[in-house]
Amino acid sequence: MRVSHRLSRQLARPVIATLWLTAAVGLGQSGSVTAEKLAPEFEMERLLLQVQEQVTQGNFEAMRASLLEMDALGAELPPDYHYFNALLAKEERRLIEARDSLVRYVNQAGRDAPHYQQALASITALGKEIELQQKPAPAAQSALPEIESADRTTYETRLRELYLVDSTQVALVEHINALLATHVYVDARVHRLNQREGIQYQVSVSDGQILLQETRYDEAGKAAYSISKTTVFGVNPYLPSGCDAAHYLCWIVHPVNTADRWLVIESDEAALEELHKALAFLIRHLQGKG
Picture 1 (cartoon, rainbow, N blue to C red):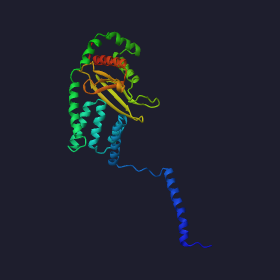
Picture 2 (picture 1 turned 90 degrees about the vertical axis):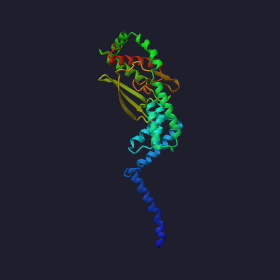
Picture 3 (picture 1 turned 30 degrees about the horizontal axis):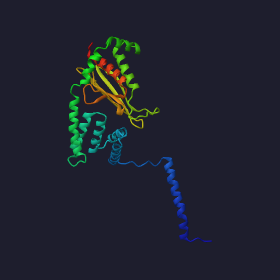
Picture 4 (picture 1 turned 180 degrees about the horizontal axis):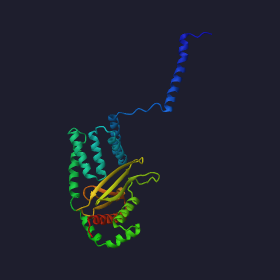
């Protein structure tokens, strides 16, 4: 039986489509076809929408990760990036950074910006709060007699024996790092034992300065590192501190940037008191005071 040319073409179409689909699947499985990626400017916009949703959800941990991704793109950051970075910095009590980010937002976005009025009001409020925190803290002054009355010699001797070292400085640093390692702050009630998380610190001393390495883990366990140096000459060793039971954290204020939190640990007032004492004695030791 002879088949017409037209009918043969109709019969061939399903076969050709099947062969094309098979070839496409084969290419995908072999890895020879790479996934399309958004150009940096469009990826920036996608991440910005993601950040807006995370703000609505109050998910600041995820928000931090998204802002880091935006920064890592290497493209020009939009004004809204600085606004949302200010919200995150304010939540983490980095008040000076929050204020500066809002100033950058207003300067770049101008009067027509969607958060213009709110940003101006926040700049004023943050300025007042920073000014207030930079004044001598009554809490720090009241802690002075208590710590001064402690038997410092006995305390430092006990630490040297505990850590089996001859150096008071080494013993104090070891003790501070042990406290920080066992009281890590995690922005969640449930800790995931199979994954690194939270904010972790490592303290060391170099040339009379305190070096602080900070490691922040995002929800996926990816780490972001930062290192800061603090000169303790002329600073008050008895640093303001506090706890926030509602957010399950305690903190110690930065010796120089007194509007910022320097160290954050889980909510444990006894651990905070011990950390406060060890840091005070380390600062006094570096200042050469008895």
